Image 1 (cartoon, rainbow, N blue to C red):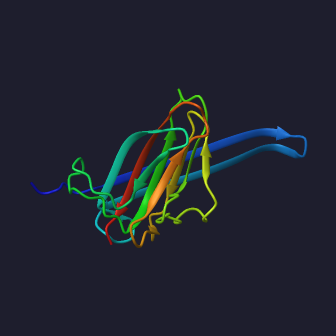
Image 2 (image 1 turned 180 degrees about the vertical axis):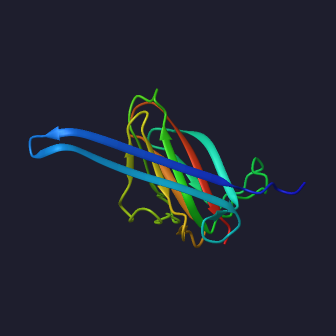
Length: 166
């Protein structure tokens, strides 16, 4: 059976209105709109692989995600990403503490979004969304991201990864 085309529509609309402050006369309005469509393929604004999974970050062990992983649950059997275009991380609201996501800790850390020592910390219920439609974040050789927690109990995280194989 042939794989179905991959397509993503990302719509973000953030608006705020501040009604006067001590140092501003009158109202201040700010708006940010991103409307990005990524169709099937390997070019700019294109994706052909997706990965959605919920994991448990286990204290002191964490969970490692190989961005070029092979798994029977994917339609094409492997993720085999060359570029990551979208990375979404959501910490479950029921978590009792923070999770940390960043480059893998083994021999193949992915530094596409972080430096070697940098990470992103998410409190329960919070999300981080990285959108890189133009060129993506290049992977190179087999690369990994790592989700961990310093809490005493497991912490749930949902990951969505959209990317291209070239």
